[in-house]
Structures are given as structure tokens and as C-alpha cells.
Amino acid sequence: MFRKCTLCQKGELSGKLITRKGQYKAKGGTGSKIARWSKRKFLPNLQKMRIIVEGKLQRAFVCTKCLKKGVVQKACVKVKPSLNNAPKELSL
Ligand SMILES: [Zn+2]
Image (cartoon, rainbow, N blue to C red; front, side, top):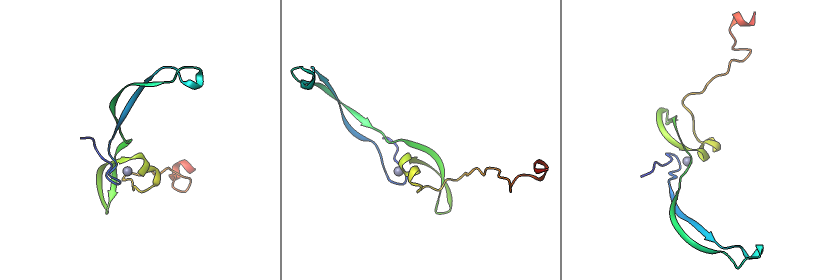
């Protein structure tokens, strides 16, 4: 079984891959027909990362939709050295 998003429980979806044949009527043909179809899976874009849940560090799979919403609190946040935080040796 495929992994799910730990926050929104988003998992895989099943669907059809449809193959058509024939030229479309709009292009001057006699119309397209479905030649065959096969089952396929739609997978969410999951990222493995360390997040903080209820104050505890946890490894989890999180979908990118949840990441974009900003629901996730990441465990490691890199602090960029700004002018105030720069060491004194460099500032001189
Ligand atoms: Zn999610």
C-alpha cells in the first residue's frame, strides 16, 4: 500500500488511462473512439521530512499541498546570517 500524508491522509487514487483512435470531427475526421483503457494510479507529491507535532520531533511524509498551506512546522530551520547576527571579526 502506498504511503499517505500524515496531516490530511491524502493517498493514492485509481483512475483510467484512456487511449483513443481516429481523427476528431473538428479536424475533419469521422470522430474519435476509445480504443482501450487500462487502470492507473494518481499519486500525491509526498516529501519525507522531520516535523514538530505537539512539541515532539517526528519523521513523516507530508504532501506538498500541506507544505504550501503552511500547516507544517519544520524541525530544522536554517537561520541566515544577517548583519545583526554576523560575527564581530567579519563586521570589522
Ligand atoms: Zn497533506
